Length: 392
Ligand code: NZQ
Ligand code: ZN
Image 1 (cartoon, rainbow, N blue to C red):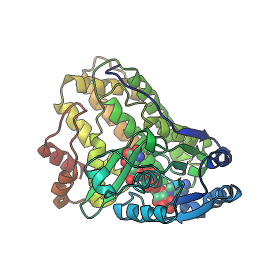
Image 2 (image 1 turned 90 degrees about the horizontal axis):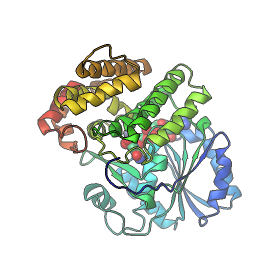
Image 3 (image 1 turned 90 degrees about the vertical axis):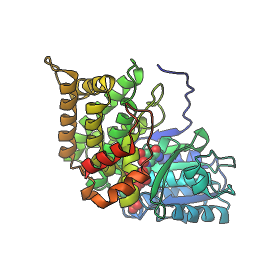
Image 4 (image 1 turned 30 degrees about the horizontal axis):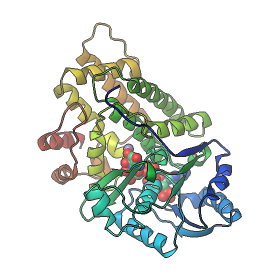
């Protein structure tokens, strides 16, 4: 294991068909005023809103509603949520929804008692909170981001065409999360498969770095195999509880701070995808699907032997490709071909054009791309432009 690290994840998870019954036991720990955060209305259609309201009412909570959190929550919505929290002296932010609601709740939590502009402080200057943080709890309804057990909070600024994530520390992570796989059954197929690819790519981003013999890589391979297996079942039968519950649990472990330990990690697929998302407002998982293969294929051509060896290991250990005397280059390519076939089988969007990007947007998307240094290669701007063009 590389380096020294401290590991602590304070989020308490309640998993299973009856997990919502545990919510009351958490609510009593906080004051009376609860800001109920939700999205565009799916929770009202599938009955989750009523179930959560019943628990809140039984616990005597004063509920202030904060609905309409959009996928890829915006800085304007964040300012609105902060005002609601301040006006109502809120004691708990309860997010009922997907990653967008959880991320948004965390952004509100660090902004309510902050005198600075939250966008500038947290998303431009990447400063840490130095104010009192309002606690966050989550009831997850959409699987993929891992936001339910991490400090990540991604906010979009349409004015500046930026979509930026701040990974906050322990104090901002949800205090608790309710994970009932039944709540995810009403997710439309498009969102389900986007979430599945989001899970898979979170694991890839942490796996494709370093050349050491690291326990984390073995965990990654197991989780990737589980995602592939369960996704194939859920793709054909979305009602399959076992597959959907496995996906929910895997999503949480894919990005709850465990896999990054001892790794430099890459995250360039997310940087490219988020930049594309800032210009198109496309679904997060689909933006990742569109840029992944051009990026990975570029890496195995140009990033050197350690990179190719890791992609060859990916082919053997995740896709069961038998070496049969093939070189690492050949194996790496075969692994990515297998991954491409799986992505197409799920029905993922495989290019940025289908997400609304055009060739004349490439320079702007490249300008919005943050270039990170943890992976097998530090990209130049020209390389970013080249990969984006390949992704069209
Ligand atoms: O808004 P409603 O009406 O609820 O509909 C949502 C939304 O349209 C719908 N949905 C959610 N649960 C449903 C459902 N529809 C029917 N039945 C249900 N049970 O699904 C749509 C997408 O929801 P959203 O929350 O936007 O999806 P997701 O969970 O993928 O979150 C995406 C956001 O998370 C960020 C992304 O960038 C994006 O902004 N991420 C956060 C991360 C983190 N915190 O660590 C990491 C990720 O890489 C990602 O960047
Ligand atoms: Zn993601």
